[in-house]
Image (cartoon, rainbow, N blue to C red; front, side, top):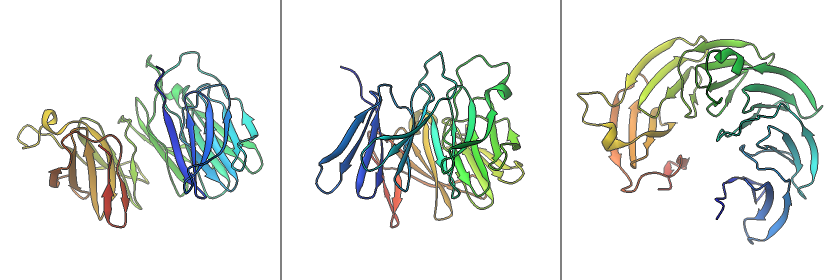
Length: 281
């Protein structure tokens, strides 16, 4: 009767999965045969990332594991500061193109580690910048773009220099939805339908819009909460908990079109493949 939460990623024709029982396993997607399964004893709570023959993952105690893709054996582990209060926060890992990994722990510590040399590049305590807040730390997914990483916490949204961990800019805007980064802009949205276009270099807000205005035909109790945003064909695509697609002008934030695609609501963020939108309700 214990609910299993599974994170997964496709890699070299294998499905790599982890769960909240401490298992990592590899399944051949063509034969459905299990290649290997390893139990590491403590629940995993981050996404999975891969590079070469390495798998990267964090457990609920903020411990980073580097696992061998071929047999599931442990290559390396790194102890960070554990959290004494367990939360539902899911850590997020991103990689750059130079052998560096970035992640935020449930304590609000942002790490940059070079996994080729196994050295810590820098460490920044994001939670200390949220002074005066007593709730458990959380952040949105991290987005890597060129020499910056972007994420939002319960207090602010940050642009961080990936070279030294310094803050390029911060904006007093909070969301747990994954941001969108284009060449010039950063798009942020809340579940309540408040959306921003921000200059990704300076942090200046170009425009802000509330999708569910009083005079608008679309009301939150009808459309539901925003659960994801994507940039598709020069438009922002927002999906909602009640099964709506909202197509939004990225230059102004105005709704261009909308449709109710599912009667039961969407279960997860959609994927875009070959000009088609795939979503699970």
